[in-house]
Length: 178
Image (cartoon, rainbow, N blue to C red; front, top):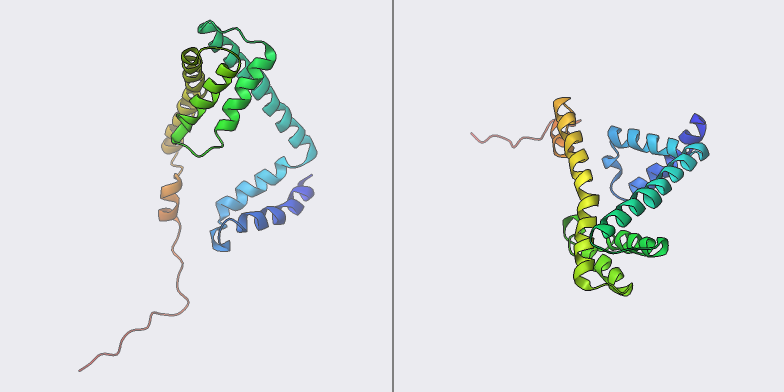
């Protein structure tokens, strides 16, 4: 299993190098790609896919049905999947941070397509957006606080902490005039 991951690492390095110069391939990125390559073995990939599907089809479905029920919208399974799909596809459109506006328009449009008033769709879209965003903010903020207490540098600090490269030749100095 480990050998297969090691065989995939050069492929990931080439893909990464297409995103930037090879000097940017730091030790931390190497470790991240190594862990990612371990995910690519079949057993881990199946587990990751199963967990992802469970999150999308169960958690999102529960969010949609509970939240839409709170604004007197009753959705069947296929209608709930349409709402989930429209919301998920909307985040791929460049927009303000957290998809504010685009997410709401896409989800509200899906509700209108299903025959619900725009106002009701907008309220549901806003509640759905909050239900999806607040846990990420709370968990991410908590993880950041814990990482800072443990002394883990964040992205901006990593460059300042990295040791400077030492030049191979001393810098040339201009000749002195007497």
